[in-house]
Length: 382
Image 1: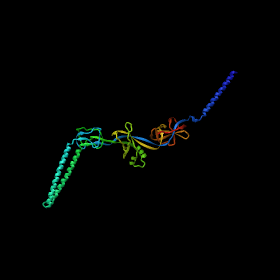
Image 2: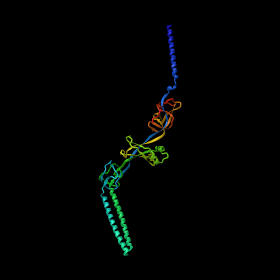
Image 3: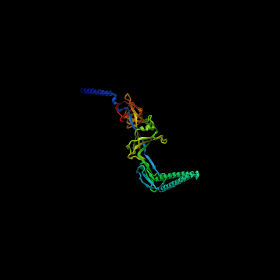
Image 4: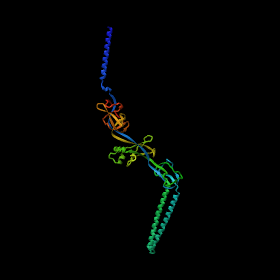
């Protein structure tokens, strides 16, 4: 009897536990489905104004680059400057032996003196024949001949005067002076070398780098986009005047301390490379930049009504960029987007999504098309 009672009790207890387990399982299945829905960060896309930058390789030249060449011939007598020195406009640089040119000047002066003496003699002849002609002692023909001789003598004086001035100029060419202020380049010639006007190699080069020019090229596509964004109805001079200042990044990656301005856009494209040349000017008061330097021109561009989307909110597939847009029923759809460059860690979106759309920005690699998502709203950092 005791065994039966215990068996019944065990049976009842087992049934009780089974009922409790069944009820618990039913409760678990009856829980709302949303407890298993992913919670992911999302943003509502908005339009904003952003400034983006484009960088272009640039070569740097001084404002003035001059080949210093001799205009006189002779042996190099003196070199007044050192390579790399700063010189001022008008400062002597080289001295060419001037003895032959001094002799040419002396000869020209002597010929001028002889011509001036001939004028005096011709004047005396005119005076003599004027008196004789007045007294009807000689014919008028002799007076005319005397006047013609005087005119010829005076013309010869003018010619000899010009030769004297030319000799002075040639003599002055023996002292080679700096046409502008700037820095001297290499000096390949040495004292005693024979200098000629026909030398292919200059005596030196002189560069004015108080202001430098940075030349860079823009492809046809880039230039068309740049022109469309900047020009409106402006003429080219107005466009250049209204362009924002540009920056220069040096070869070591550091920014140059001065801002520059675009001064020139070439009149035609280089068909060999399909690009147009543009020049920006920078003040260089400390002479940090030299001709031959390289760098990158950074051109700022302001985009109005830009839509920013974090790069981490996208995925690349088959050369396309996709994002996940949240629909009204809280499910996501994968959409292909078109970008127009980057601003910081964000894409600038050109198409595919629009302002007002809600886009998932975290863990996009784990999302499936049509999956239900609970968005946790946040904002995009510019």
